[in-house]
Length: 245
Image (tube, rainbow, N blue to C red; front, side, top):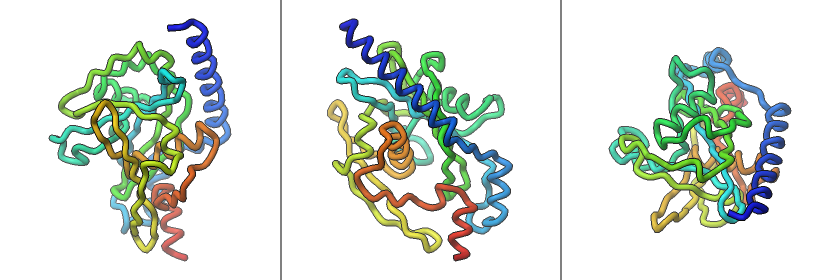
């Protein structure tokens, strides 16, 4: 690898790290499980429990062309839920996890063989609430050296590991949307078609929503399409307020 190119990449990544940390300081407003349960009390009919907490790792690295890319997985077709779907590495919080970053890193190691010591966690975005009462926390990490990571999929959980350009989640290309409705509120689910090494993938729903948000933060601009996120993603309290209007 050309030393000048390597130096340019290191500088670009360092600039990104600093910008994301600054964003973290200015915008982070973590929601604790207690706060989530308090919000849930005002809307218990819609969601039976919000005690479940999960985290996903949005691991960014620079590709050969200098573009920012993110690792994704295709879930095993043998799994009982969301089988065969594209997802970010992640899963539910366990008792021994120190925090959300610890959950995301542990799950990434279990699913794709990513050593936590290789990843620089720089930002934890606001949590997303699912209709099933799970709090999903996106954790953004930087992989400074792509060549240091050799993907090793856990075949019990993952059928494939691939990467995609982060910027694609801001573009109105290879994208479609479907309008859905829940509790009287209409929103859009976005679907991104992507091909990697001859295999075709569809990145959609929560995973697409997280990556649209991450791309907007990283590139400091909104998507080139109307997003209309599900209101319940922002928290139960806002959904309850909407229901009362």
